[in-house]
Image 1 (tube, rainbow, N blue to C red):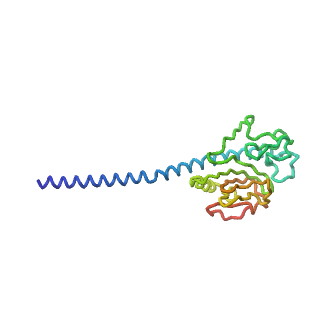
Image 2 (image 1 turned 90 degrees about the horizontal axis):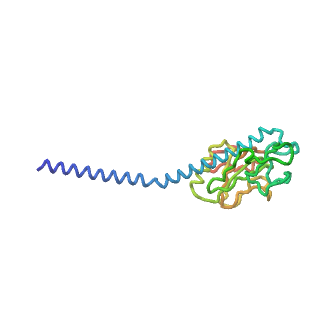
Length: 232
C-alpha cells in the first residue's frame, strides 16, 4: 500500500510540472505573436522600400552612364548630366508634377528638349506602384543637388522601424529620414514655394544622388543619431 501511495504522489508531481510547463509555453507563444507580426510587417515595408529605391537609383544612374553627354543645351547647368525635373519648362511637354515615374533621360532620344521617359514600356522599365502606406516617389534636381523621396502620414511603429533600418543601409549623408510630425519641413536650403516639402504629420524617406555645397542645411541626418558627420 505504501509503495502505491508513493507512486501516486510522484505521478501527481509530474502532472503539476506538465501543467506548469504547458502554461509557460502558452505564454511564450502567445506573448510575442503581436511582436512577431509587427516585425514581419516592418521587414516587408523595409524590403518593399529598398527594392523600389534600388531600382529607381540604378535606372537614373544607367541614364547618366549611357548618355554622359546629356543634353547639349543643358551643359553648364547644375547637376548636369542628371535628369532635370519632369515639370521643367525646358522640356517640350513638361509633366504636371515631379513624380519619379515621370523622370526623363537627357540625351534620349538625342540632345534636345524632347527627353525620353526613363520608366517606359519602350525602355523595358516598369516602375511598380509605391509600397503600401507610402506615397509616390518624387524627384528633385535643383540648387541642393539631386534626390528622390517618398512620404507617409501613417504613424504605425513598424513603418518608423522600417525607415530607420533602411537609413542604416546607406552610407552617411546618402539618405535621411525627415520627421515632420511637428510641422511641415522644407527639404531644400532655398525653401522656394515650388521646392519639395515634407508635409505636416508625415515622415519622408529621402535618397541623395548628388549633393551640392548649398545642401549643408538641408540634410537632416538620421533619427537615431548614429550619423554625426557633416554633409556634404
